[in-house]
Length: 71
Image 1 (cartoon, helix red, strand yellow):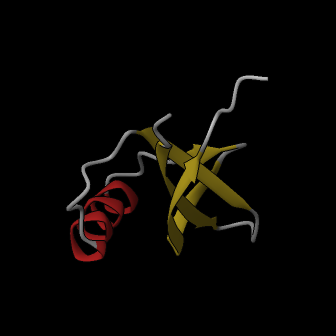
Image 2: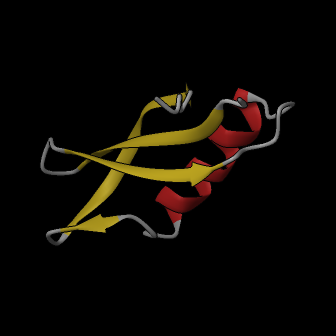
């Protein structure tokens, strides 16, 4: 049984709400600095837009791991 990983990038929108972008199976050696660079580029290029509100800053970066166990 192997854990499945998910990189979650959370952005704060201009309207004060949050938006998440998820990436399945990130590399094991991924660094926070690398993810921040990509997220800042996404913000600068207005890639994240939800209900006409653009991302204004990084709210959080997480790697979540889940195990699936067959019963």
